[in-house]
Amino acid sequence: MSKRTIGILTGGGDCPGLNAAIRGIAKTSILDYGWNVIGIQDGYYGLMNDLKRELTFKDVSNILPLGGTILGTSNKANPFASLEEGKKPIDVSDRVVENLEKWNIDALFCIGGDGTHAIAHQLSKKYPNIIGVPKTIDNDLMCTEQTFGFDTACSFVTESLDRIHSTAQSHHRVMVIEVMGRYAGWIALEGGIAGGGDIILIPEMPFSWKKVVESVKVRSKLGKRFSIVVVSEGAHPDGEDMVVREVIKDSPDPLRLGGIGEMVADRIEKETGHESRYTVLGHLQRGGSPSFFDRILATRYGVAAARLAKENDFGKMVALRGTDIVSASIEAATEGLKLVTPDMELIKAAKSVGTSFGV
Image (cartoon, rainbow, N blue to C red):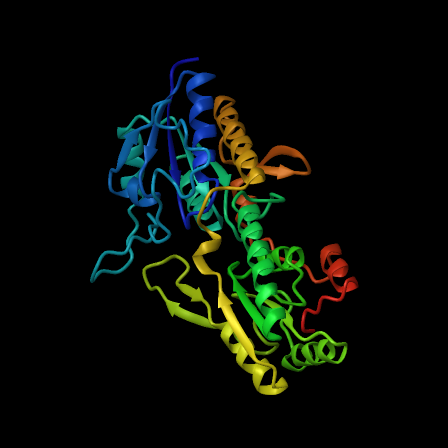
């Protein structure tokens, strides 16, 4: 087959494993297929503003353990609603297609979460040769059992809870840990279970203040002089809205959640009399070197994505199903968010070992 030139971009928030995925796509393209590789800088912003650089074999060597992305990223740039100061959102997607054609890009690999893939689906109507690679610590992307970045984030949450346990026991306090996840509770749920959280609050199961307070009081009556509460940033009391920390007007998802951890700690201390403290893990969950699992998953995704391009199987996103790497349409992957279901086996298992969900 004729020599091709491919483009790779990383969009949305950074997360561990992005460089492993870039490496998987690029090395497979260079070694197996003899293709040229172009790295597009800062996600869709680079596509809109003609920012790119060649990626050689040397460029993608020794990047497997690195956190972040060597290409840079943006969680604001949207070619279908580009915001310029003092102006309304405008559609510059034709400019993006012109740049892809000018660069002689035969296939575009979009590595990202639901926002990145939603834009990729729109763009595929004008430029069909697109393949998606799923990443996000939130693990909320449809059609795949797991996104890379999630395992590393949960591992960090688990380690943090292990450390929090020490001080909670020593000072006999209620310790509230707020974690990321946006509208999905996967990080709080799995990280919380692995770290021995006594109470886990997630967006999919709006909680009762009364139930949360009762859970702390019951533990106290049983002789437990401390409690660990894991709160997803999107968790909220039944009948109330999520807590919004700030609004970023020039972002595709303008709401920045945060603050529920402080509210929970204050309420527990007020109603139980137990000294309470809160910790927000924040961006620490997104940084650092990827875990063993995420390095392998991102590599497998990258290799499989390159193979889809070789087979001209575009409009697809690579995905994990069981232990196999498969593919699904980008359109199907962006039809909604993959959320925790209250009747799932993991929730039932957590309840069986005494975990409260405040409901």
